[in-house]
Length: 287
Image (tube, rainbow, N blue to C red; front, top):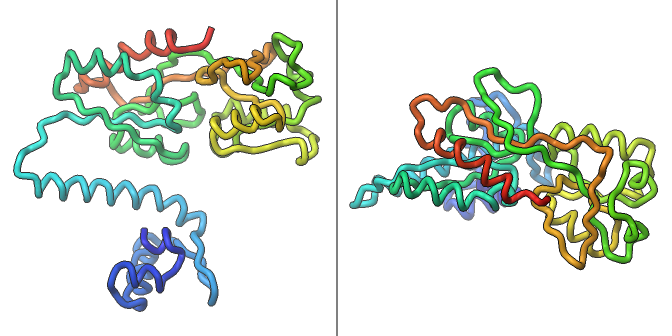
């Protein structure tokens, strides 16, 4: 973790108060055990490989578990709260959970909600291992049959733009309208499968000069406000305001959004969460 943060074996050794050869030996031992190359080294630079980036999430999770266990062992008073771990792709996914968690707290006074914001490629691994109880996310294909999905809502796509946009006189958009505008979209590797299909249709032979890719919805909204183009996003969490056009994309298929879980059997907290979440999402969604 320290080498990944500093991208320097020498700096990592200094921070860990060990010699640089000791750090190098430990990394070699870890790579040998994993049968992966975690770092790409030259005489001047150190960078993470793709395999190293993927392992970084696992390494963080292992350290979190270790630190949590260490704190519990050191604490003289036992923590009797019952953790309930909610996985999601971004902070936006937890905005509407307050009512459901309030209802659960009344029924389970010792409830301890824990949120994990984890990249797409790691969420379902955590679910399979049951290191998270539920995952709130858009529907994806190719998951194991042991993982269940409960749809909460179909989310329409919307176009967001500055009030002085050329589309300001419209009350709704078509995909044809969007082909004439600079677009602000989410990075394909960080968005749901159905959204990626829409991007393939929209971007087609479009010039790269007319497309802005963003790592999160908040970034896309900021660029839309600044007049860089029309942000095309799932509309559940995009609030309306006078500083932003909010235009439904009428001929785009809505995207399924819901909750993943491994099993409800023997897990009363999961049952209670799944029971309360659908109504909460429906009330929170924009009309």
